[in-house]
Length: 322
Image (cartoon, rainbow, N blue to C red; front, side, top):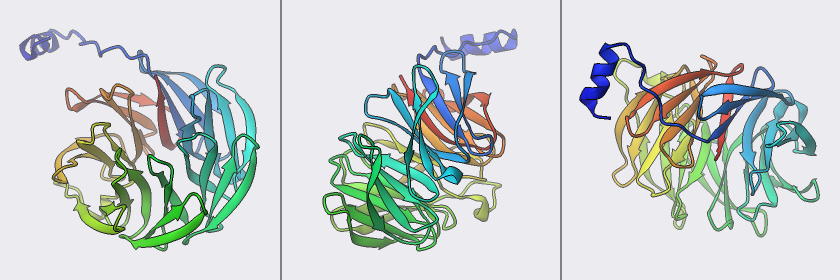
């Protein structure tokens, strides 16, 4: 449809339909102890799954038949069947799990335990903790390299990214970043890891070979106070050309050119955007907005938010199943 045609329809008051999507989106709601299930075609909540208290981190198992959820106040991982949409199992997590990452092989789950300064290693087949890795104070972010050999944990109070060898389960290096690092995300080629610093207001790009920060990306949004710009969630496109960073109380998502590290655009979304996820075809970006209790849907081709979907209380994490 041409822009002129769209404008004409808008003037006539005719709704322009969104492209259909077979995606199913799952959103963890920290305050309502639930997961909202959103139909990607109708963009409406089709089910609500009750889980443990204070669910935050959320991810799929290897074949997307199960969802793992960090139920922080219950010190456990809840397991949800993606067909029946019911909790079918619970697994140990260590104390106060917040974020985790599944190894590429699909068996081990590495869990940040915020209250005891540990990363727990959960064998999802045996359903037991097989190791604990001491890290800095208040561990949160968890990222793993595409080859599964290197794990990066961020510790909020220590302001460090800890590089962990997954064979030995030992910390092999520590990289100082800005205040309160939250999320660690590897590039698809494994050459770099991006780390967001919520209070520092930056994203550090770390070379995984030298373990040096090669770039710090800062943000400036017209009309928004500097202290309100608090980077949290990060996603990168598969082709490695674009990155998107959730900026918390700034209510914006920054779109970044990965080659130049230049911020190309700030997308206005809901209030206090926490985390985000791309649709499998990368035509949409979904964001969780913790204060407005909704999920924004950003149309990547139009470059703007086309829908806001009300979910549960304080939505935190988001994942997408094709």
